[in-house]
Length: 252
Image (cartoon, rainbow, N blue to C red; front, side):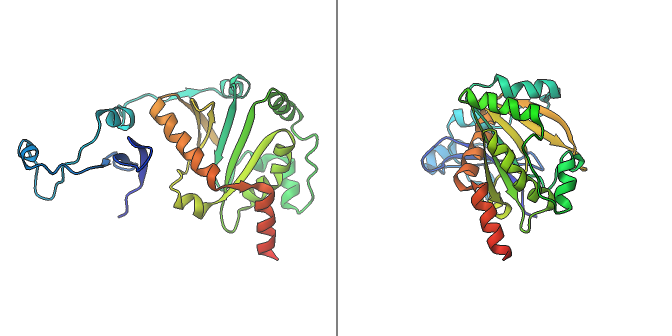
């Protein structure tokens, strides 16, 4: 069976060697790097069995990107504290949205109208939320999202593609990425916000697509991993207007 591997980090920003990956199911760690070849060095190794290959990795690679204690207690924050993050950050707030549906969207009047095929006038919807976004954007802060879309898109994803008009109007930059492209890039199936490249708010959902809680992540190596995901997604995603136009062209 194919492993589900997560890239944790590398000691080299140029050629990616050596690097650490982690098996998401077993917790096993896969390390690759330069092979130890000097016979005198190899002769000093204990318990090197047939089929095993010794490799050389910098100590800081293990410190920075090796798995931390498995019994770490998640830092779960309340929704009020989560909401305050959107006014307390200084520069950038970035979101990755990977789910096929969000239960909270389906409770809204706008979603009901959308599924009936009625045009949505977004002006005035969620006025308080929109006012806060405009205020924060007016302070020079940036809000960006990359939304993953299936082929064909789900009803929830099409709704968010329409909803992007509202988010864009209040200062957010909305981009989209096909799921097959996200999978080829190795992007995780996680929803999260990253604030100022130093703090991650991981959104945890139940099987019914309800938001259960928010986990705060501040460990530098973990934050860097999410920032790497952000950079890859941003490089390949396209503005929602262009994405919607391409989608319409495919349907015609």
